[in-house]
Image (tube, rainbow, N blue to C red; front, side, top):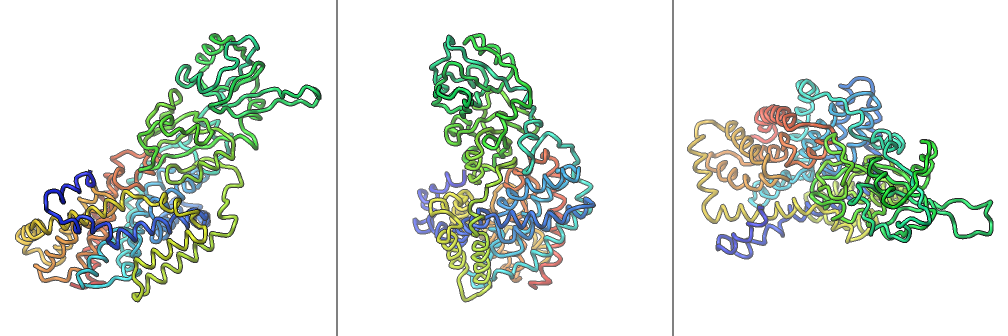
Length: 590
């Protein structure tokens, strides 16, 4: 909506053409795009998953210790990478850890999301808000904050969040049993089949030579639409008749262009009544089987079953599986959709997908591997085959880690511009193959925050041109003239915090920085501590699951309600705010 209205500022003459497009050349916007590519290199090579596994492997014993390690892991990693990427990697690992401990995952997933948001405050590039305030301070000649200048304030904020969640936060966390509601990475395909009760809906049908279905193409039959059935595989006798004793039936994956032959045995998934209707209409014969017999065909070294999670802002959001041509693209069958614990097994192809939907798919392991590489749209939270990390097996993980270390060193050196450090690291990720190609690099960039923040720079210029910044600053000066410097910190923390619950990705900080700068000058205080307070507040969209993508990811997986985010989120925001107002002036005096 902000981007749709943005060009009208130029048409109305509020902004010149140069001012209209200036935000897209802003160093923060360019750095943010580059950081997505750097993060993609680390995520692609598996180094983050390895680190997460190592750290979470220390969990055990008490819930308190496990919660501490989960939050420390997410917080430390989020200081260097996108919080959304960190949650995407750690979510299945944390769920697996929780279920192994026979503890509800709801005790860990919301703290995981919160830690990833607060952990970004530890470094310059950890959150867009930090980059925004550093850029505004540099442009106005107030200060030049380097990579670790944010660390003292970030450590206090993170310690405050950690303390809160380990004490009062633990009491507020819901405790729910999620035994069959979600699966986790590492669960076998057989366990997934049991959780979804797949075997109860599998049926073998024999196609006689006289059946009208012979010669029909699967795509023309439209079984999911006409019968609410999914044809999973076909068993077919080979054409070679020379060695009948050595003949074995071929197992063929059910592709859309496959034509049915006489004497085929088809495996279909759906309700028994629908299968009976199909058998009656086409004169098919039921073929009896036992569970062990079907497992050999349904789950094997060739065929498997896994579960994927739709992430926020993916290309699949609000699309149907038919719209995205899922079956044609991946040659896999979708058997069910798990939405907040409700199983959808009929008309799955026409169901509009929502963020957090868990989708159960069946297909060849090779095709499932292709889905697991499409991390922009989905997270694979079920099992995959054992060969899965092609990039990691080539030793690229340490290359990606070395590039990131180089970027951090350059960012710490004031002699090298921050944007140049990030772009150099992003280029090296592509050149070394940690990110496969420039096309892949462009795909890894989450363009929504990049474009939104760029547009917000233009909106703040419009506010300045129209006198809006001065008017709001004067109004605040009159309203809060006698509250002192700490009071100014509290007011701007609260205003930015409220705005950040509705405008994502730190864009609220862009709007508030010119107002805070003018107000601080009017009050005769140093703008630096005020700006740091803005950075903290702009990064804490903790009381809503709709603005922060990290919150949206854990909402369905943890079966949380909106009230959980509101109750815990507002409490931790107030607690951290009080701590920040007191401690920021210690590090950066007025």
